[in-house]
Length: 180
Image (cartoon, rainbow, N blue to C red; front, side):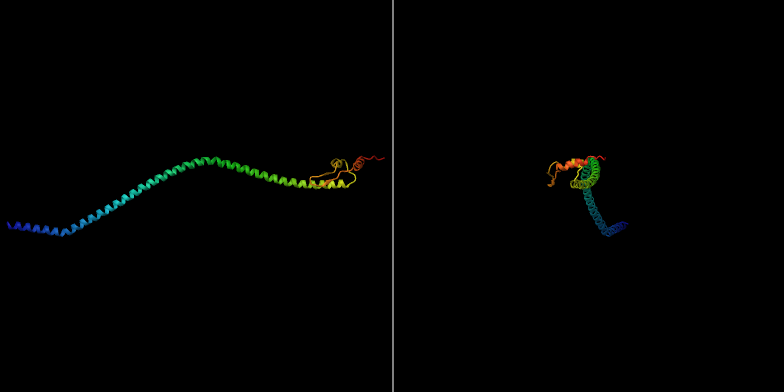
């Protein structure tokens, strides 16, 4: 039996060697897979680190912009506080301007009305003056309105004074006559 354990050992050894020989290519594939997976993990870790770096940079930028926004909000608050009274004053001045425009319109219409009245009164006065001048008998009112001497008016025309004879005639005619 001594031969038999040796043979068995040999067979066992040959079987293990055959199993090792058969498993060797599979073992090589496992090693390659492990290296491939390790390489992929390293690549993914690099991408994660790159993303974390980018996230940190963006977070820093966001913090910086947020600070600027807070500063601008404070400035807007200050400007809004200053703007409110200015808007109120603007509204008051607009109301005053509207009232002044309405008053100006009324005054303009009044000036046009008064000018028309003045032209009418001046035309009537001129007609009365011509009528008084052309009549031989001025009354007391025309005597009071008559010039006392020849003078030049502001328009450059000469006005005539009535003679003392015309005045005397006027005073005689203006007295009431008694009927007998």
